[in-house]
Length: 225
View 1 (tube, helix red, strand yellow):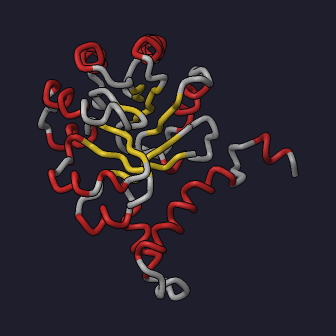
View 2 (view 1 turned 180 degrees about the vertical axis):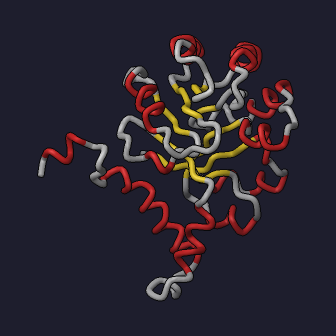
View 3 (view 1 turned 60 degrees about the horizontal axis):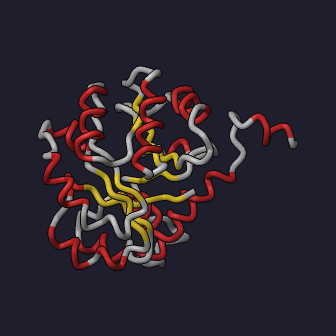
C-alpha cells in the first residue's frame, strides 16, 4: 500500500519528505514548494476539498484546471473537485467541467458509485477515492461496502483513511499526521537520538506495515491460527 504524505506546510517539512510519495493540495499550495517538488519521489494531486469544507472558500475550478496541467506528465493521478458535505450533484458537475478522478463519500447516495466508476473509466484515470465527512471513526462498514463494489482494476485511494489500512482492498491512503507522529517518536527515550528524518522513515514504514497486521475484523487471517 502506498502512503502519500500530505502537503508540507514548511520548508523544513518539505526537506524531510524528499524521496517519498507526497500529496500536493491546490488549496494549500505555496509558491516556495516549486523548489522542492522535484525531490518528491511521486506526487498525488488533490483539489483540497477538505480545506474548502473547513474554510468555506470555494475552489476556483478554472484555476485548478490550469494548475493541474503542470502535473499531468508526472503525477500518479489528479483528483477532481469533490464536495465532502453532501452536494454530490456539485461533485458530478465539477468532474464533467474540470476533470479529475471522482470520490465516493459517505454523504453520497449509494447508487452514485456506478456513475463514478463510469467517470473513472471514461477519463482513463482508473482511480476512485473514498472520502469521509468527519468524524471518520466508526465508518468501516461504509468503506468496505465501497471496496466490495469497486473492480480490482480500479485504483482505490482512501482520503485520510490511514486508520483503515487493514482493509486490504485500499491501494493507497494519505496521512496528515506524519509530522506529529515522527515528532512524537523523537521524544521517546529509545529513539530520541535519531534525527527527525530517521524518525519519519520509521513512521512511514509503520504506516505501510499496518496492512500486514492481523486485525479482529480480518476473519480470514484469524482463521489461520
